[in-house]
Amino acid sequence: VAPSNSITEAMKAKKYDMILSMPTDNYPSYKDIEGYEILGRPELAYTYIGFKLGKWDTEAGKVAYNPEAKMANKSLRQAMGYAIDNNAVGEKFYNGLRQAANTLVPPAVFSDFSNKDLVGYSKQDIEKANKLLDDAGYEKKDGEDFRRDPEGNELTIKFASMSGGETAEPLAQYYIDCWKEIGLNVELTTGRLIEFNSFYDKLKNDDPEVDVYQAAWGLSSDPSQSGLYGESAAFNYTRFASEEHTKLLDKIDSEESFDSEYRAKAFQEWQEYASDEAYVIPTLFRDQVLPVNTEVTNFDWGYDTQVYPWSTVGKTAAK
Image (tube, rainbow, N blue to C red):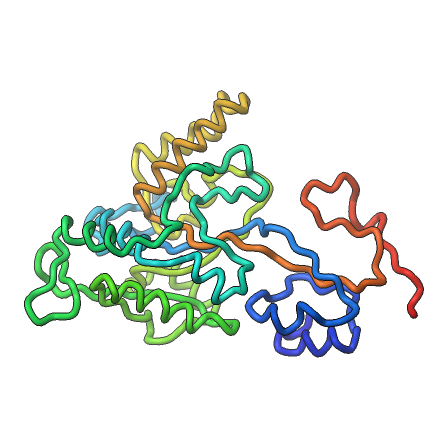
């Protein structure tokens, strides 16, 4: 394991033949280093904005959704999604190696199930965001900079985001600035970025100082969504649940879903419902890169490779 701040120098010294899990936020610093070929592929992962909507009921072993939670108004969540320009984020913060996400099912591996026609929140729409808030009663009083809640109370939204990497702080500030543009007063939980383990402790323990958070999911090859968003899933950090939501998730994993067409339709229905409810807003699909020494031969990094890649890999004689 090598620290990310020294890996570029290690590449220049030809210390490694392959570098797995290479950070992409500093891609320009190593993309042209001589002696390496940079392989790339879509990452089986996505970044998202989550909204805290309840707590975990330990005794019942399931989420306890709170319809009175600060972020329970669907229009508020949708507006916060439309306020962000994720295409700009992918281009400016990640050198084009991330792209605006339209759904919670990445097309990289799940092409049969990903709803490619769903727009979701992949396009910024400030006008629509403002209208959603206006219509839902989030209004400003004369002379005030920020909107109040529909009852007329001051509204401060606590946003949790992780520390780490060169983009973490400017990206978190970008989101806050976008939400300020539509009149929402959003502040960082604890007043600063949060270390990885502390961040997830806050999510797992339903810290009341977290209203909104930014995180990511790395996915397995099983496209089922129940383990992340089901009513009895501990990983359902938003704590969202509804009768209709559970019904749609059950259809995806039902006996009828052994029929691929039935399952694909079930996935489409769930993605449309999840997008409308906006308890989680997908922000970015991700590309991952793998620097490989040009002396390495016969290595296949594709998801669809027909052979175990390490069984064929070799290396030419060093020059």
